[in-house]
Each structure stands twice: as C-alpha cells, then as structure tokens.
Image 1 (cartoon, rainbow, N blue to C red):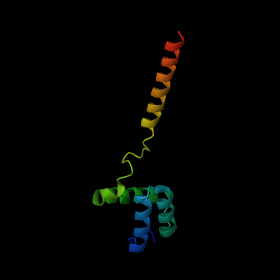
Image 2 (cartoon, rainbow, N blue to C red):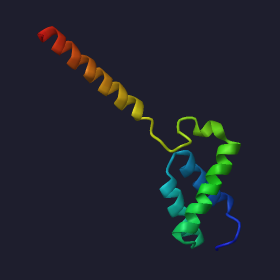
Image 3 (cartoon, rainbow, N blue to C red):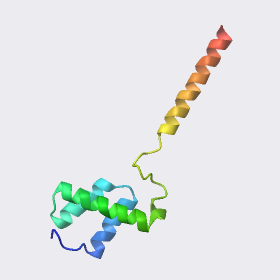
Length: 94
C-alpha cells in the first residue's frame, strides 16, 4: 500500500492519535496499514502532524509544539522553595 493515498478512516485514526500526543501509536498504526518501514512511517506521521497543527491548532492547545512536558517550571519552583526553606532554617538557627 506504500505510495497510495491514505483512507479517510486511517487518516482519522492517525489524526486522533496525533491530537492526543501519541505519536508512537500513530507511527505503529501507519506502519501496519501501509507496510512502510519505521523511518518512512515516522516521516509521514510527522508531516501529517505539521499539517494538522496548521489546520487545527486549537486541538493542540494542551500540548507543547516543542514536545516538552512543561515540568521544568515545577522543578525550578520546587528547588527555589527548598532553597528558601534552607536559608530560613540557617538564619533562624544561627
């Protein structure tokens, strides 16, 4: 099936997986349906994701375009709070 246009049913399944941030699942679905190799399916899924981001950006509102999870801010906040507690304890003790 390599090289043939994707069916609307397959495109819908791929789109759903991509919108939900399940890129690996989308690649697996694509490989099984088309018989393409891993690299080719990955490239195809990434191209589909780019088109979906352009045409339906609102469906990606909860995800980050760079693929990050956004937990860096929480880590920095935790370290800052721990540093404040440590400084306060040392000031009160000393």
